[in-house]
Image 1 (cartoon, rainbow, N blue to C red):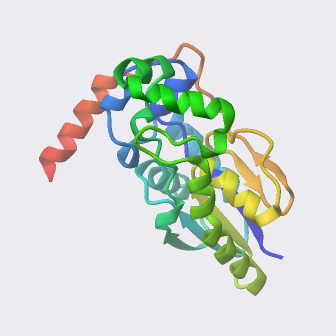
Image 2 (cartoon, rainbow, N blue to C red):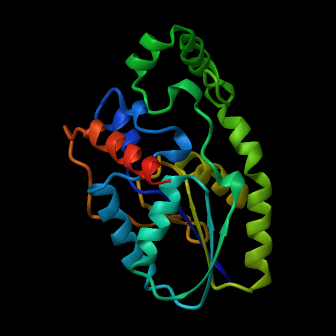
Length: 231
C-alpha cells in the first residue's frame, strides 16, 4: 500500500514570533512570501532531504504554493535522487490568520485592538473563532477535505509507492483527520515527517532553533529589496 507522509515546512522568520516572542517580523513579507530562515531553516530542509532520499519507488509530491514550502521542497530535493512527480496544489495553503500573521499576541493586540474579539471567541470555541481579517480553523478543515479525497484515490490506485505532502502545520493536522478520523496529537514541528499509515512521526531534524534566537529583520528586508530591483 502507498505510504502517505505529511511534512511541515522548515523554520521561518515568522515562526520566531511565537517561538521566541520576537516582534516586527511581519515587516519581512506577507504570509505567502515568507521565506525559510537562512541558517536553521535551510539546515532543517537539508536534513529532511537526506531522510526522504531513503524512499524508493515512484513518488508523488503535493506542495503548497507558498514560498516557505517551495523553498523547503527545493532545498530537500538537492539531497534527493529518486523518481518524483511534483504537483503544486493551491488549496494546500496555510490558514489565513489575517492581521495575526507574524505577530506576537501582545503585538497584535496593541496594533489591532479589534483582534481582542478573536481571543475571546477562541476561549469558548477555538475551531470556529475567526482570525481578525482571516478565517477559522474549521474553514481550513472544510477546504482540505477534497484534497484528502484526492490523496485517497492516489494511494488506492497503487500508481505511487509514496505520496509526500509538503504543506503547513494546520493544513496537515486536518488532512490527517480526513484520512484517518483522528487528529495528530501534537503541533507538528518544522520539517517533521508524519506517516498517515503508521499514525506516528517518522522524522524530526536534529537542527533546532535555540531559545533566545533573534532574526535579523533588516537583513531579510534588504534581501527582498535586492530581489525586486532585479525584476
